[in-house]
Length: 518
Image 1: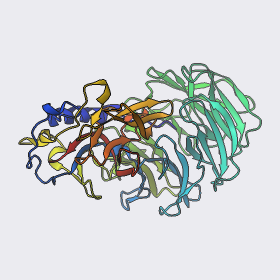
Image 2: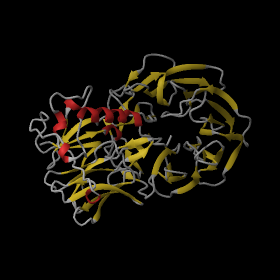
Image 3: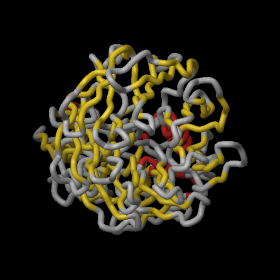
Image 4: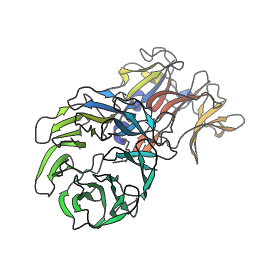
């Protein structure tokens, strides 16, 4: 499914606990700040900037053998990579990424070789372009554009050439699906994206011609999928948050009477949609909380595991899945029974998982190389270290801790509102404009306001997000937040008050700036 979700609950709890435990003065009045102590935090050098990071939002693409060996990181993007899938010959991997140099709210479709080399941007467009799927023969790629509203779906060659729009202003909460022979595309269309209760199934040629509806199917439907033989369509009917039903209907000549094969709980959250087994004999359905397999006629049902995202192996004998636990893991299990095998060797991000065509390897997205916690960074170099004493479990430190860090002094009058520079002459703050949020600097004596730098279309105000360097030469700030279902904080930057010398300092997502160690 194409939607990118930012889990609100997981990081919000950390923010609340961390801010309470650290008792940072933040943007409070200068006279209320605690007296700096040269021994406030053991191991942190004088002048280092402390901040709270949520690095697990920066997901990268990983490859691993189905037995758990050979784990390899294929991408390393500061903004995040997701949705990877192999081409049919296994030689290339396509995925979505914001990539180096792009704005954080604008994605492009990329391909690279299986070993992680030869990265290429196929879309390089000003609109949000998101990878959906490869054609069955691997010669073309289906992708969407403008993911913030009704989407246009396009088909392009695997080298990015000859892009053709096949569907305009699609409002269904699910992705289109290639027919097994690659000649047609199946999708659902809805009257309204705000309340997708009136939807229908559409089949269109892969060049965008000959669009037609499947008769007898209309209502709150989503997640259509071709059967492996191309003769039937699987789809889900139901309203998000309530019970749901899974139906199967013939494709040709114009559809038929839908057959209900499942009626009950459906996992409407972060999970894979129902999926045919490779031979078309069974359907995997994510319920809450189990993943079940049901025969295609609905007569036999069995529970497989507790899982969210999942994928059948190419031979249908195994299932790869992301576990439902506080620290999700990637597992492989025999569909007919047996003990699951942990193949990720550590926590992964809840996201789609894909098999290689030969069934030997898996792709998944994860922020596993990043760690949440409190970090310090040198203002004069690339040194970045995690403060273990403040970053895990009970994060309350012994002694004065970061409470001794002087925070950002907040102005009180209309002329000096914002985060005051050390000499009190300038006040930095954020302002919302039509083109996004800006870091601004106000001259306290004259009242003149300068727009210094655009920090993106969204902001996550989870904590203190501005700080001046002790000498007043730089403003440290957070840029590139992404808002969706929750909010992914932005990254740590610095810039001179006149707008020159902007520099990203770390590829961890930052929730709060605590100030500089004395």
